[in-house]
Image 1 (cartoon, rainbow, N blue to C red):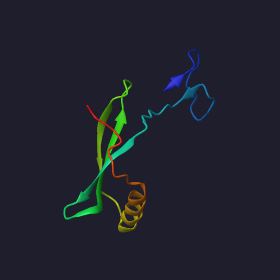
Image 2 (image 1 turned 90 degrees about the horizontal axis):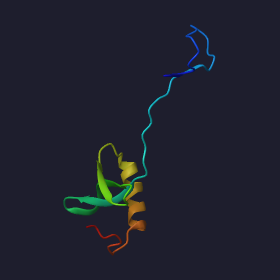
Image 3 (image 1 turned 90 degrees about the vertical axis):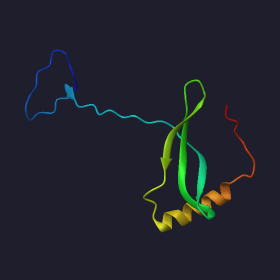
Image 4 (image 1 turned 120 degrees about the vertical axis):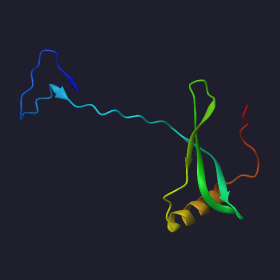
Length: 93
């Protein structure tokens, strides 16, 4: 909660003197790699999510791989095939 120093609580009134502030954490992420399911390199099973630190170094945030519907998987697989390049574009330490 944030409030004006000299204000008091007034039940049932919205004066703007008291405000509920919700914590929000977000960051820009990169899909760094895509792993194919066993026996099917072209089939999406999980996305590896990475982000950059303040010092411009990559670190792993984790993976996403559950909850995709069959329709979503088909759409993602098509988009991934169109965006795939066959060379390494980033070197890690």
